[in-house]
Length: 115
Image (tube, rainbow, N blue to C red; front, side, top):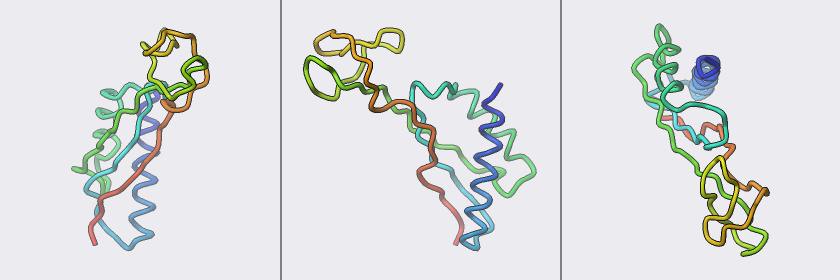
């Protein structure tokens, strides 16, 4: 379960950032998670709860924003969602599309910390 190692890394990064801001508590970590990131959201949430135990982040929340896959459709010449992660086709015209513009994200976007 690589979600646990990701959760541990999130906790370590949040602790370091809180220290950089002279804060002793983190209330929430905001994360953007792309559909193609290879991370199972529920497993990550469970792992985050485990990783925060005994740390200053214990009791904090991991708030996950799920990011859909967006491709550049070669026919429409527009940013379009795909029909499914198994079928990389434009959801509008059905053309095969392999130029992924969004959906691989795994990034912390914000921390809610104590002043």
